[in-house]
Image (tube, rainbow, N blue to C red; front, side, top):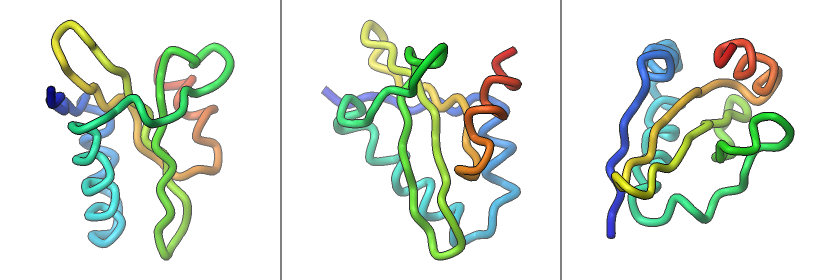
Length: 95
């Protein structure tokens, strides 16, 4: 069964700030989540309930944090950003 992807407000705003090439690469990777979101690794520590996608682009490394709602078959995109300071920024965002 395929999952639906839902973007939270924050990552939807974040991705708009990216260069168009990076935005395209990130969206392509996220769109692939509908088939099998379970193939991606969990984050570590206090964020271990979330999963991540590591994305390489010509201009750097990016990560996408997401959650999976099995009951509703939804993948929720929580946070998108450059690899450097990703965990710190994600923790700050989640409060």
